[in-house]
Amino acid sequence: MVDERARVSLGYFPTPLDALPRLSETLGGPHLFVKRDDMTGLATGGNKTRKLEYLIADALEQEADTVITCGAAQSNHARQTAAAAARCGLRCLLVLGPMAPPETTGNLLIDDLVGARIRWAGDRDRSVVMEEVAAEERAAGRTPYIVPYGGSNAIGASAYVDAFEEVTRQLLERDLRMDHVVFASSSGGTQAGMVTGARAVNFRGRVLGISVDEDAETLRRTVLELTEEIKGHLDLRFDIDPDTVRVNDEYLGEGYGIMGNAEREAIRLVAETEGLLLDPVYTGRAMAGLMDLIEKGAFSPEENVLFWHTGGTAGLFAYAEELLEG
Ligand SMILES: *Cc1c(COP(=O)(O)O)cnc(C)c1O
Image (cartoon, rainbow, N blue to C red; front, side):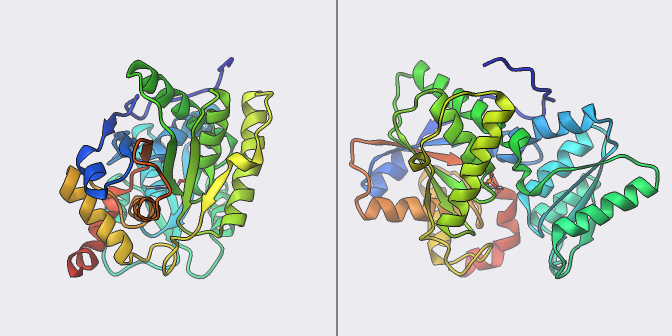
């Protein structure tokens, strides 16, 4: 692939690839491994760091001085964007919502520490509010750059094509083969990049997104559309079989950001067996789904399953009381 994409260095790559022997044994299931994208290093890390290396580069190319993005109050994406902006000397405005929670903790605390300004969206559409904020910035003589929700456009999502190539090299070096890759999927960028990357390297295994907030059909459509945009952006000529976009929406529980028993138990088990921290919104839910699928016999004990840790651990602190209740 000819790669002329502008990129700023924000994270530490390759992220580690580790075995999870004690968790695998406890679950009596397949051989579990983890790809540590929680260790990308940007103010506690996460999958958005990869996307932001390209998005912030694009902002700098456009001579922006202000970055605007949006998300939930405990958005990991907003926190990583704010930290990336700080590192690159850009102002950052976050449209979060709907409302300010009673406590400034977790990601919200980090947003504040890295100097981001916050606008609460209330019941209004966050994209509309972002446009308004951008207009205000322009009126004040500044040059704003809007990073889309989740960093999930072709520029951002293309980073997960690289990420899939990165893990492919790691597997080759270790003479390992993965039969499945499982991770939390939400705005679809991570999954679209991975599906495209998997196709680019002729990955033989299956890529499975566990949806955290969207029904499977909606998320599949979003991911498929994004794969087309990524292909255009990177000038890739192959076709992607729509059947390779696999989404499981059986683990939505009470809805986005609402931690249930399944997430709590997954977070505790992984912490107790491997000393590894998951998060309440994304990776806890994806791991709970993976554990349920293992219990239902979806994998054979000889198979290798890669759990792609997408980050979010800063969010743990916003759920401390609920985690301790269990
Ligand atoms: C944003 C996020 C995801 C989902 O990634 P998408 O590209 O939006 O699908 C998963 N895990 C964590 C921790 C995230 O912050």
